[in-house]
Amino acid sequence: MADRYLNFTGTAPGRFLTRRLGLPQPSALRRWTPESPHLDGELLHLTAGKSAYETDLTSILKKTHLKPAQDASRPAAVVLDATGISDTPGLALVHAALHPVVRSVAENGRVVVLGAPVSPTDHHQAAAQQALEGFVRSLGKELGRGRTATLVRMRSAAAAESTLRFLLSPRSAYVSGQVIEVGEAEPTAPGDWDRPLSGRTALVTGAARGIGEAVAEVLARDGARVVVLDVPSAQADLVRVADRLGGTALPLDITADDAGERMASALAPGGLDVLVHNAGITRDRKLANMPAERWNPVLDVNLTSVLRTTDALLKSGTLNRGGSIVTTASIAGIAGNVGQTNYAASKAGIIGLVRSLAPGAYAEHGVTVNAVAPGFIETKMTAAVPLFIREAGRRMNSLAQGGLPVDVAETTAWLASSASGGVNGQIIRVCGQSLLGS
Ligand code: NAI
Image 1 (cartoon, rainbow, N blue to C red):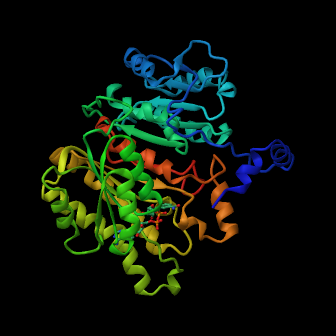
Image 2 (image 1 turned 90 degrees about the vertical axis):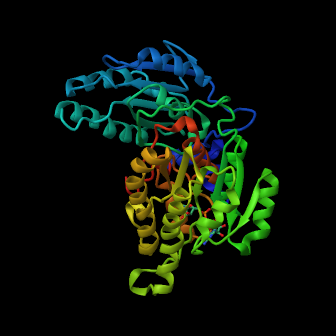
Image 3 (image 1 turned 45 degrees about the horizontal axis):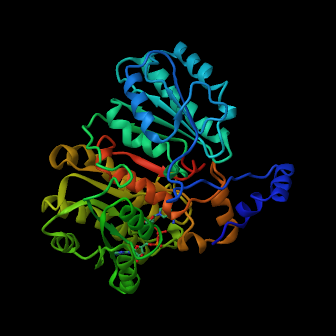
């Protein structure tokens, strides 16, 4: 369903009127296109205090297609390295670095703050580094004009490369106000950063339409061989998606007891590199009015099947080392939502699964486990939401608009890359910094 308000504010009279009335002013977001795949413009690389990463970061940032500049008048991106800040007086350097430039950041620009892991033993360092979180989340709410702010806590520059490339590109248009932890893992750089999933096989569940279809499309664009899965009743749409992407259709209900084993045999002998658990359903009703027939299927499709099939694919060795599992949570699983006790329980369960499985799956199988948590995404699911609630959902985020399926897909593709091996156990919200659950 078209966002007419966003279209209206894109016109001169619309801009004038909405400004006069003090209404939200969403900017059309700049997303990846084949003609314009990178954020063009200047990059301001600032350092607050001493940094252990300065040289390595400079060489990584040079690869982003942004032009490094000491004195950019309209930077497309500002990267502030605050990793060296180890006490609260040091926070004055964050203000001193960003206060003079923040106003000049270009429309659809990026502010990325780099922090260090919060120390469990040095409470001065912990206070200063945690302060960056409140800083970035507030900045995300202030920036406007399609500009985003993100905090990346890093332990090594090399492991953060794929994350920086993602954040400093149009692919991350709807990711703002987030804190991303990047661990120390030895990342495997792709041969070609424009096709980072070349040679990888990806299975996407719920891919006959909506977000799953967009995920399959973006993974295929990035070079993956895709196997698309959906319920047998959606087979015609599924085959259409598979044919369009040069992939394979796997009609299968993920709630079947042997779904994991059937996926494994469909993927033999080469196995699987990227497993995207996207299939999901809603059966909304307030708890007082919710019969077990509406509760059970939601928990089964959204959570129990994800656990069962993941366990089967790990146990059978179908997931190759260096692989990635991307699950789908939701901001409803973080904030809760009226009429969605079943759905929010299932999506919060996904978050528990990710946090618990990630360290062990990486140690034992060399596989990362992360979640995307979409906010309001323009799909058939949200088009069915009553107009007033739909409008509220669209505007109640820092970018004042709904996201598109492709935004979730781009985030999934970043997590699915072997270069993102340092990103593990993360819940990445793709929500334009929704006010819900923040
Ligand atoms: P959708 O309803 O358009 O697509 C879901 C797909 O999953 C459908 O093709 C459906 O046939 C398939 N599916 C359902 N049960 C299945 C089963 N038992 N076995 C195999 N496939 C099955 O939904 P949408 O909007 O694309 O959502 C995708 C995911 O994103 C879901 O997990 C949803 O909960 C999540 N999400 C969506 C948001 C939104 O705003 N649209 C917000 C937050 C999360």
